[in-house]
Image (tube, rainbow, N blue to C red; front, side, top):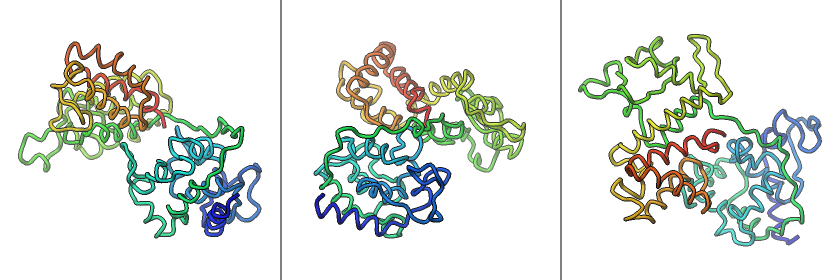
Amino acid sequence: MSSSRSFVAAAVLLSLPLTLASCFGEGSIKQGTGSPPDDGGTTCAAKNDNDAVRLALAPACEGCHVNGNKPIFASLAAFESGLVYNEKYVKRGDPANSLLVQMLKGNAPGSYPQMPPGQPYDDLVASGRVTMTIAQVEDWIRDLPEPTEQLDVPSPAEFRVRRLSAEEMVVSLMDQLGLTLEDFVSTSTPDWRDRAYVVNWNKFFVWPGDWAPGISGEYVSDLRAIERYEGLGGGNSLTYRKKDAVFGPSAGQTLVQMSQAWCGRAVDKTNNAAVLRYVTLADNSTKSPDLVKKNLRNLYLRMLGQSPSDAELTALFEQVYLPLEKQSTRLAWVGVCAALVRHPLWITY
């Protein structure tokens, strides 16, 4: 072990004010023992240098990455196999070209230039929320040893994937498609902001019953908006309806219709780069094949949070885009967008 790497690990361990969740995980169980901590839950020991880094970064990262499709902070095994020795994120000996460092600095390529989102990592260090600096992360990557011959495989129990709730579907899709509430409500009169919103017909508006007519009276003329929300699995306290955590036929049917309608709204919206960032409806696979594929790749990344492989991009282009383009480029982009909304990676967290 090099002296610089030992110094980084020692510095991290000596300056690690961790939360209870970071040290012991769900249920306040000491990691690796299956028993409650015997020290009151105030300290925890790293198993190796990589674990020290995991624990140091956890207060900033585990909120999003201890569950879901990428639970890389759920355990040391998940951290090492999913991040430390995954060249997509960490290139041993080359911190400058490691995506992890780029995301911490806020200059990573793609749709997620900064992690964690919302606040620069250096600000988290300055506030004391995390104690490991970016320079220390770079030192760790620079001296990172080769992995053992056989990395531990994370337990299947660590991958706690669930379907998105109705609220998450509505809010996420509206944001990803560049839509706002005003794309679904009437704004035709000068004083519309001072009146009850009138939902425009044929736009497949989806809204919680708790917020719709019955409490505020804000949204009128399309009571099916509530039925659609409940079809997605949303609850309604007014009718004592519980949330449905199962993705059944009703949710699937509603999401199919919702994805087609909302993607159409996004494609038709003037100057909306959320779906058509690199192309216009005048571009097609004959005139601008490279731009079409570039936009497909960007939309895949935006909707699913990861870049497509060459095979995935080819399948999306040949099996979804091209057949629909024969009718119109508008229909092609609506179809691609709707197909991504119904992808398992979009539906689950």
